[in-house]
Image 1 (tube, rainbow, N blue to C red):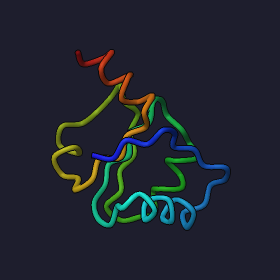
Image 2: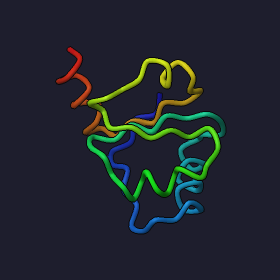
Image 3: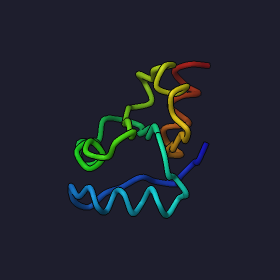
Image 4: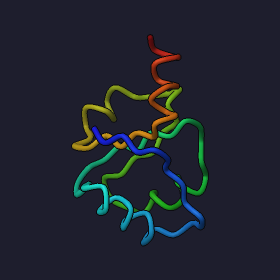
Length: 85
């Protein structure tokens, strides 16, 4: 699991999101968890094979187990604790 201070994208660009994933050491199937639905992240990641994005409030056990990497925004981690604790 990789916890990031903040996952923010300035523009909808798959190449930029791929660079972000590479920078944090992700090189395979990944689940990116955000505090809420972020259309910029969703649209930037949707063309990358094996990458799934989801808000923290609706996590899927299947997607978590299927992912090699779990990339979580720090605020999303707090939301996960709030919803599932």
